[in-house]
Image (cartoon, rainbow, N blue to C red; front, side, top):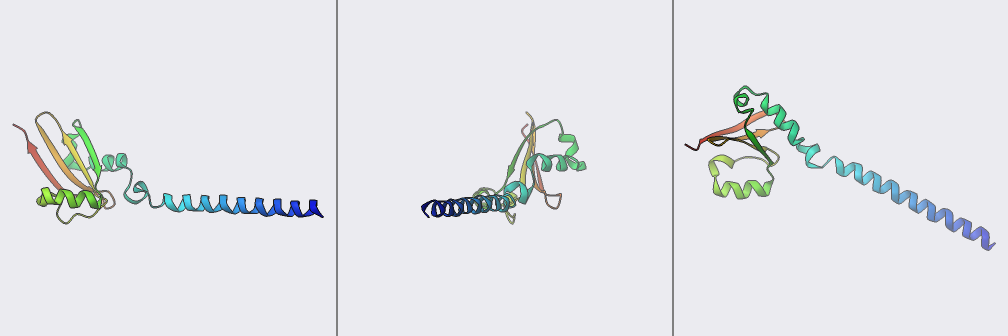
Length: 124
C-alpha cells in the first residue's frame, strides 16, 4: 500500500512539472510577440529599407546611428526640440547619418516604410 501511494504521488509530481514546463513555454511564445523586434521591426532591416529611398541614397557611405524611440524618449526629446519630435508615436526610428561636415536626421516609420521627417545639418 505504501509503495502504491508513493507511485501515485510521483505521478502527480511529474504531472505538475509537465504542466509548469508547458505553461512557461506558452508564456515565452506569447512574450516573443510583444518584443520590440516583433512590434517595430529589426533595426538592421529598418535601415536597409530606409536606404532604398531615393532621398537617402547619397548618404549611403555615412556613419549611422539608429534609435527606436519610446514614449519616454519622445516626451523628453519633444521638450527640447518640439519641431522635430512633436506628434510622433512610439515605435518610430530616429536614424542619423553623419560625417565630419554634415548630418541628416531622419524620423522613419518602419511599419509603413515612410520617412516622416528629415533634417539636414551642415557643420560648416
